[in-house]
Structure formats: C-alpha cells, structure tokens
Amino acid sequence: MTASSVLDRSAPLAHVGPAHPYRGGIAHFTELTARAMRNAGHPPVLCTFQRQYPAWLFPGRTQTVEPGTPPPADLPRPDRRIDTLNPLTWHRTARWMQQQAAGAVVQYWMPFMAPPFAYIAWQMRRAGRPVVGIIHNARPHERHWGDTQLSRLFLHQLSGAVALSKSVAADVRVLAPALPTEQIDHPVYTRFGDSPDRAAARNRLDLPAEGPLVLFFGFVRRYKGLDVLLDAWPTVQQVLPDAFLCIAGEAYDDPTPYRTQIEALPAPNRVRWDDHYIPEDQVADYFAAADLVVQPYRHATQSGVVQIAAHANRPVIVTAVGGLPEMVETGRSGFVVPPENPGALAEAIIHACQPKQREQLSGPRASGGSADALAQAVERLLLR
Image (cartoon, rainbow, N blue to C red):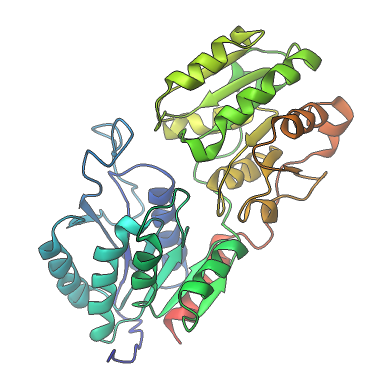
C-alpha cells in the first residue's frame, strides 16, 4: 500500500530525466520544467543519468553535448546517478531523493525508461513523497512488444500525470484510468533566443539569399517522414523552381535511401542536408532562415519543433497524426495534411509559399502552451 503524499514546500523538488551533459529536446524540457517550478516557489535539484542508453541502443553519434560545454548557469548542476541497466543505482537514487527532495517530477518519453523510473517513483511514494510524470509519449512512435505493459507499470506508480497533448492524455487515461491527469499544450521553447534577421541568418548558414526556404528540423527516423517530403519535392520544384529545402538534423536511420532520393531529384542542388546535431547557438538561425517548417510525420504525439517555430513566428505544415493538428490553426499558422501523402504535402507547400498566403501566415500559436501553465498543472497534482 502506498503512503499518502504530502508536499513539503520547505524542501527542494527533484527533477528526473535527461539533463546536462545530455542533449536534445527532452533534456531541454527537463530544464524548462525545473525553471518553471523554481519560479513557482519550488527550488530544484536535478537528477540525471550515469548511462542513459547502452551504445547499441542509441542510433546517433553521441548522447551528450560537446566536451567543455558548461551546464546552465541558472540551475543546480545535475547529479548523474541513474544507470538504466543497473538496478542498484535505481535504489541508491531513490534513497538519495528521499533525503533530498519533497517530491519529484519525472520526464517520460519511452518504455525503455519505465523500469528505473517506476522503481524510483514507487520508492518515493512509499516514503510519502508525491511524484508527477510529464508524459511526452505514453505510447512510443515505433511500437515494440511489451511497450504498453512497461508504460502502464510506470504510470501506476505516479501521484499524477501531465500530458502535453490531447492525444497523449487519451493514451494515459486508457493505460491508467484512475491516475489524476491534466493536459496542457506543450510550452513554447524560448531557450534559443529571439529570432535573428532572416537575411543575416541565411548568410551565416550559407543558405540561398533569395527564394522560399523550407525547413525539416530534427533527427531523422522513418516515422518522421522525410522520405515523404522528398517524394513531394519534385512537384514543389516544378512549380517553385527557386524553392530550397534545408534538412537540419542527424540521421538516426541509414542515410543512404534518403541521399539516393535527393540525388534523383530534378534539382538536387536545391536541397541541403546538414546531417549532424544542430548546436543550440545555431537553432535560431535555422528557423529565422526558413519561410516554412514542415513535419511530415507518420506517427506523433506532440512536437517541440512546432513550439520552436512558434517562438520564431514561422508557419508549419504538419500531418494529421497524434496531437500535431492541435497545434496548428489552419490558414492562420499553417496547414494540416494527411500522412504519407506526397501529393497533398506538395500542394500545401506550394500554397503556403505563395506571396499572399505568406502574408497571412504568422507562425503557430500554442494556446495555453506556457511554462507557467505547466508549473500550475504540476503543482496541482503534487498537492492533491
């Protein structure tokens, strides 16, 4: 039986998930959550990994930032305690958190993380400490046997859950019907700073100074549909010969089929793939340089890329999967197209790049998607 949870406001709140030196969107979100809760009156401690993924499971080149990159100056240095493959570290982490923290907020995005996170949450709640999960994905983009059972295991150890889209909230309620769950829109990412001048950004990135520029941003895996965008691109090039496609992100799949598609295009020189992790100090330039951000996903729950585009005031085209349509006001901030439909995608890109249409598109607006709204939802669940 789990002890009832009461939040001690005099003690710090633990934030569990990727954090410096780990890179990527979930690490950014751990830090965003820690700042939001600190601003709401809950001083943070950050708990991250000794080892996040074994090398054989991680498809990218490196899991961490460049050596020498300093941690965020405005947050405590993360404690690297959790080895996902070593249960002894789970137990030691839970004991440390019981001594250090009044409660915990755990970032959850894939079933591989369920065993250590479920154990830590179970131990915290046994000690009367509330634990809230921030649920990025209740079900993974790429499904495997046992995923549902692992996610259910984790969810059943929580005091409450915050889902970042209606789609994810629906999944949580199926997997854990009794779990108190709130849904908020994914907060807009402001960490990359204000959007720079478009011409200056294109110059710094050595991108064409003129013509519409379409951006595909983020690591490349099959579920993200880059191949669908490349199938649509000949039609775009036929109508908009000065259009340029910039792909900015590291390949987590075999890059060969994508490169073959690019080479077969009518004008392959109008496509560039920056096949590497994009450093934080360049992210704003990529979005400022773009006229349109395209996410042709086959599967999705919600998207941090849309929220970067929102801050940069860039319109988006997304597919009608998961929570992506929730983030777009059709004709005002972008367009929604069917997944795996190159014809519809090409038509939407061409339409969005017309001068009159570009004047009407102001970039996505994430209604309610703020760090303050996130903090309020987490606090309500911690105090239940």
